[in-house]
Image (spheres, protein in one colour):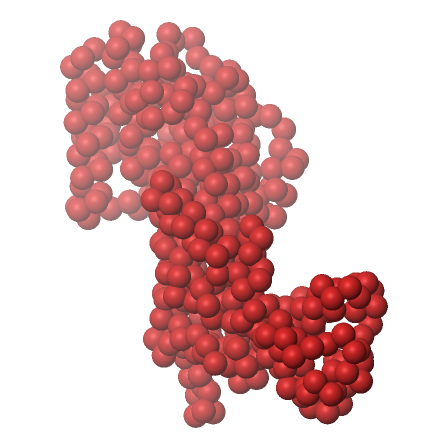
Length: 459
Ligand code: ARG
């Protein structure tokens, strides 16, 4: 057991207690961030005359070697160290001797871990953003391809009005676009540097906090040293943003599972993204979509855990906060994996155009348009609604779509109907006429697609 704090103690820590307390098994992920923070700190200490240039160079060299040796596998991170910070410091001292003991001047593991975690989250936000951008590219491709693919739009999972696949996918485009902007907000708000806050009350050394903040790419230093070491808002904000991403992916997954079912057959998931059954030879299951939907639970779980962990903690640092790491790492890995797999599944998925169109035709999705036809011929909307309602009832009992009723049949319900009703209620017309901003009409969608394209170039 290599501890940084043995001086005050007369007894060894209980073995189980030591293991319970240690975080090295998971916080070793923060090695690069920890070393980056230490380098910035050492440079600043030297600039402030707290270290000599020689001491600074020895420390920087030692830190560089620790990173290289760990990455090459020459140096192993073992359970012998309590956490990643102890690992780095102990190794530094082993390498460069007593000079290494000066690195921790004016610093505490409390501000160190706060810094490491911020650096890690900031970097991962960039990675998740890239994955989301890739997914948006795939969505945009599909939207372009399916600008004229008619399908039923649903409310209450009941066929409602005809729309297009491009329009439906465009809804998800907007969701993931918002997700990216949410992540950007989290990043902007977290970007103040806690280093130099010490354990909680700053330090007596003349640290230049602005310099370390600048070196590490922050807007500036945090403004209150107690808040600096006890703030995990950015973790909670990140987990909220990740939960929303998963909620979007889960809704999309649910739709794909439905669409891929024997009843819908709107899509066929590629073999590469499906699995079979060990007993039923005919089965091709949408496991990937199901797993994405399922994993939403654990990301929500991370958010709830973190909110709960933080709710009763008095200022400033308490060990409870160490719990942020496993949750956050797992949520980040889960989201990155899910976005990527989902994208692959979407890219390779076959959309069955004829099935979608057929389905739109048979759900009376053009009933609103039939009513609008009457309104355009002077019938008040409420009466038109009633007339078309009766027509639908008639169609259901005779097994006919509105498009298939004869003009005589139409006349049984209203004399206003003329031959041009067929054109007015054809699915193509129904969609085509909807060209208000954000609607599925070809013209309106073209505008949205062009905007989406430009957005992806700019962002
Ligand atoms: N492993 C700790 C964490 O993740 C590092 C900070 C330890 N600080 C302390 N005062 N024990 O939070």
